[in-house]
Amino acid sequence: MGAELVAVILSPVVLAFALGVVAALLGSEVRLPEPVHTALATYLLLAIGLKGGVGLRGAGPGEVALPLVVTVLLGVVTPLVAWVVTGRALPRLPRVDRGSLAAHYGSTSLVTFTAAITVVETRGLDVPGFLPTLLAVLEVPGILVGLGLALGLGTGGRRALGAALGEVGRSRSIVLLLGGLAVGALAGPEGYASVEPVFGGLFQGLLVLFLLDLGVMAGERLREVRRAGPGLIAVAVVLPVVNGVLGVLGGTVAGLPPGGATLLGVLTGSASYIAAPAAVRLALPQASPALALTASLGVTFPFNLVIGIPLLLTVAERVA
Image (cartoon, rainbow, N blue to C red; front, side, top):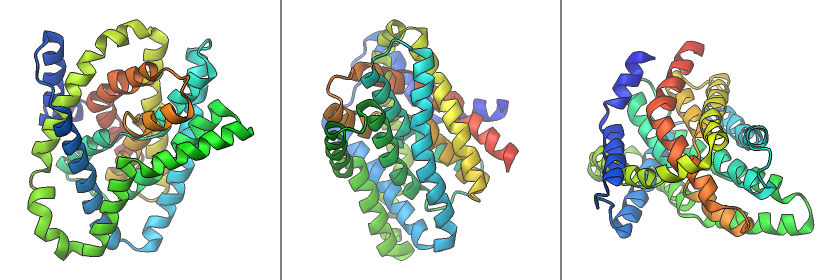
C-alpha cells in the first residue's frame, strides 16, 4: 500500500485539495465564486454520466445485472452500519442526528469517486464503463434507509420519506448523472467522440480546480472538527473503512475486476455532502446540518482522498 499512498498524495488532485486547506488556514481568499463552483460540479456530473453512458451501451445485460443487485443491497446495508456505529460511538446523539448521519454515509460522494477513477486508471486497471450507473443507483436507497431509521414507519414518517424521495429524484446530481448516462448511451462512441475534447480532455484540469475549492471548504471546517469531539471523528474514520471494504467485497462477488471493485468500495465508503443534505433538510428539519457536514466533508472526504482510496485499492487487489 505504501507506493499507492505516495502516488495518491503526490497526485495533482490531492495536492490541489491540500493547497485549498492551507489557503483556508492562512485566511487567503481563494474560494471560487459560487456560480463557478456550481458550474464545475455540473460539468463533472455530466462528464461522468456521458462517459458512463457510452460504457453502459457497450455492456450486456448479464454483465450489469448482478452488480446492480449488489449495489442496491449495499445501499440498504451501509446506512444500517452507520446507524449502529453512530449509536455505539455517540450514544447520547438524538435519533434525528443518527438518521441524518446514516443518510449521509449511505449516500455517495461524486468527487471522491472521480478522484478514485483517476487513481485506478493511472494504475492501468480496467474500469467497467457502467460504474457511474452504480453511483446513481446507490444514492437513493442509502438516503431513504437513513431517513427511515430516524422517522420510523408511521404516517408522518412515510409522508416525509415520500417528500425526500421526490427531492432526491429532482436533485442536480441524479438528474445530471441519469441524463448524462442516457445521452451517452444514445450517442454512443461516435457521438461522444465529438465532445470528448471538452468532457474528456479538460476533465483532469477542471477536477483540480474543483478540489482546490473543496480544500478551502474543508479547511474552513477544521475548527468545527476539533469541536466535534473524538466520537464523531471516530465515526467519520471508521465508516469509510468498514463500508468501503463491504463495497469492495460486494463488487468482487458481483464479478467486477479489481478496478471496478475499488470504485464500488469508494462509493460505499464515501459520504454525501450534496444530495443527502438537501433530502435531510426536508425530511429531518430538526437535525443539525453542521454535524453531518463536519463529519462528511471535514473528516471523511480528506481521509478517503489520502488513505481510503489506496487502502481499498490494496484490498481489491488482494481479494481478486
